Image (cartoon, rainbow, N blue to C red; front, side, top):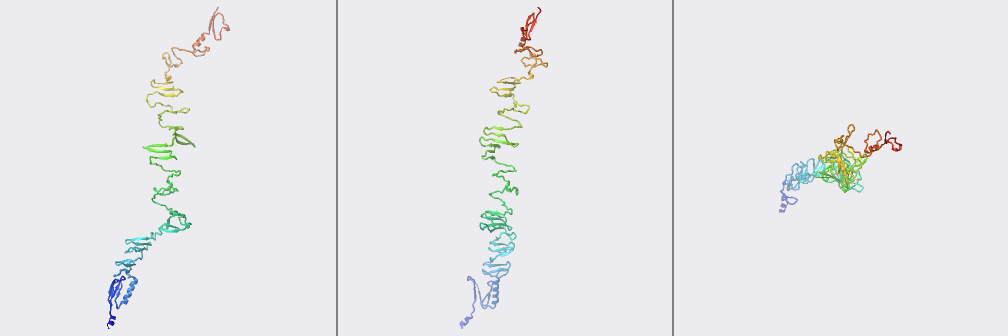
Length: 468
């Protein structure tokens, strides 16, 4: 009878976890609520209903606004307040790896949680402290913006490029090589190695760059006072023009010429214009009615200054050396007076005429005598003025004579050394010389009582005939 009695003997259930550890022990005929589902003991009369409820909980992952009160590690719970499936990590329920799609960030995220921003159509991942944007970098309203990897066909094969978009418009293409797309790409007839900008947008690089290979000089319109068009810069490879002042703020100054012949330099605020080639000239030319002339030339061979043409000086001309005039032309002065010895000191001054020997001829004012003198060979005498002449040579001896108003001259004595011709005219007013008087007296012949014959004399002789 004992074995038969043992056949109906009741025993409690021990419920274990997956790892073998015990959760609880259930006595016969009871139900255990240690976990989120009901655990039934042997011979529990109402286990059918409880079992079915357990299956429903499993199907809906305990869907509720409140977390299960007695969860096991690894248990799933669908949080109906956030519409998230969460898993119990032994301490708390954490959202599972599924992305949450809504217009605002989840309030209780965990590291690795994904959130789809339903307004902007962007995906975020939670780093453990905040949501980080995964992509795309632009919102749905902004449309395609940023870099996009694309493949473009070309005659040389497909080319992988990175295109930069802004508001769904391709602004630039980044390429590792030059190529021409075989399918038309708006704004990109050709793609260059590097960054090619969309030609239809007038796109430009704006900002600061360390260096540039080229400057576009096709335009001269400045976009601002600090952004200057390339066409406004002076070029060094061709002749160019500037409408502004050119300032060289350095004493080394200006250098011109293939051999740097002309320099303009500054030293101690003194300006030097130099022709640096040996024995070469510095010329200043003008256009005279279509003909090039050189009115001024600084001669390198002798250091002289050559002036061609008229020279007009407004102010004084001060010459410390000699004045040499080598032309045979007459020197002309339009002034009514020529002033010498302008220094004001008392000194003989005048005109010197160079002659073939060492004794030049001079005409000068003798300040010691207060009259003009002239002469040659260092022998000079007074130049007589009309005021120095007298009409009375008897009273004022050793003076130059002049006639009176009546044409008379008074002298003490007159010596006439010359022998003149015979006196033959009764109208002559010439003074007869001694020779003329002697000749006249010799014409008087001897006294005779008879008339002379033709052979006794010549025409003009005088004869005395007395009575017999």
